[in-house]
Image 1 (cartoon, rainbow, N blue to C red):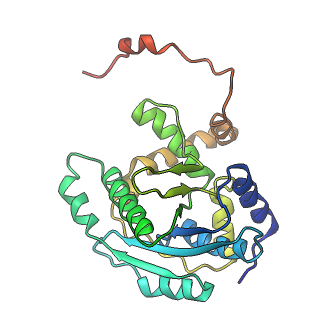
Image 2 (tube, rainbow, N blue to C red):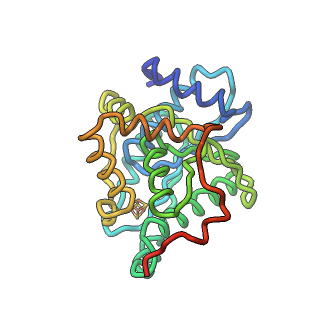
Length: 252
Ligand code: SF4
């Protein structure tokens, strides 16, 4: 139950130390959607904690968005019980809000906003000072490209974010692992991954960006590595002065 291959330990600990993600006495709540990434995060941190010199507590919480296909909360509970990780299930009606706004606002932005708010609020109420999100390197890379394409900004997922409103700190310790790493581990460990009940998951900006990167990689295998490399700070970045932004041509 505490088995985690060494390369995974090494990469997760590198992230923890480099970005000071875990400190003694932390109470860490894993956002558990039931997908491979968050199931792996919960498993991995159970293993990490078993050998950690830094004492910290672990819990997991599932925000049920309320889609028509129900989540198997009993399976999630059984998974966490097997790991010895306290599990919390929070049903919501976020799906109704998404449906009411979907003609004007992207379902994913509404969903992400309300889901995170529910998770952060629950963490603060229950005395968890950290919320652990299971984003990996491919999520960061897709977000980086999506920010450029859809918001006109350069930026990616931060390793650590302190939220002043709730006092909770969000951490993303899996971002030195690729999606391939996480998928492989989740298969190897036979984690009971659930299918996403979301009807929008195949037609989101993220799904389109993922497809775009895949298509570009078919022509040039370096595209993925180059995108990741571009996320790192670089003093020699050649950008235009902000004063010329006014001359951006926008579609009429
Ligand atoms: S794909 Fe579905 S579950 Fe994921 S953020 Fe979008 S609406 Fe929410």
